[in-house]
Image (cartoon, rainbow, N blue to C red; front, side):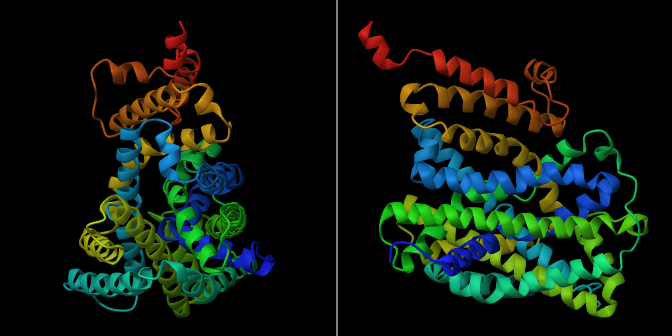
Length: 438
């Protein structure tokens, strides 16, 4: 068998969706709906572009290029090593993996138990159990389709559908007036909100795990594996789009009643409690734990595989447990601290991922113009890092002042012009072959 039928294609897509759909995916869409209010449709358009379209294109780009190492290698060997390392640390033990435990803990225990004075002990025990279980499942990356796609994700989708239908029938109120950030540039703000899901970064890595599961189903020809991985990407994107729209709607109809919620967790908690009463806490706890567990397993798997390939002295099994242990420690810092730290890091590395994905769809570009990738990524990366530092009030003399004058800088897209300039320079930069001929 060298191609799947519809059943297995959907199953692979659901498996990929389950790896994408974790903490941030639950937190940010309802908060976007609550904050954007009457501007939710415009904001969601931007959010869908960065949190659905870009991740799907990321899976396609990396799969077609033959892997993330080959795609980033078009910039340079040293860049490939360091960027991929930073990428894996960001979506792995430094940010995304700890966030899965922190977010699910906030929904699984505090609503049911009085933890005053014992919060840190409860969080420690929960994170120990959570990461032990996730690490055990991640030890079998070729069986994630069975663990995630067939068992846990159908339960998750059913619970979210129940919440959505209840909100549709019994909304808490009409959409509120949009918060200041969404009044004038709702679509742009929605696009930036999509960064926080980290899905575009994860997409550059999850394709590898999906390919492992495809090969486990007796698909052996490389072209067939590539084809089925791309199908899985598009199907996962459809699921993401539908579920995100449901969650954004739930946030929107929370109305003015729950407009003071500080984050998406509070928005969902308030709405589900309003809709289902005490039972709502149980429903929401199940949603958060399943979603965060699925993503944690996927991230542990792809991080373990990458680091085992780069540093083979440790086995895949050992890398999984190393990352699980480190993530457990970091998760005990608390969710708010993780989210605050994640914003500047993501703002710095996200634009480069976007540029790499876009460039990958111009076939043969790196062969005709070898300097195009390095110049484009270098100027884009420099601009995004300077902008991220500026957002944290860290000023680089001359450079920070200069970048503030760039078009769309205030909207968070100051990297666009530098990337375009880099592409033009790279297009006309003489290659070594041309120098030899001259």
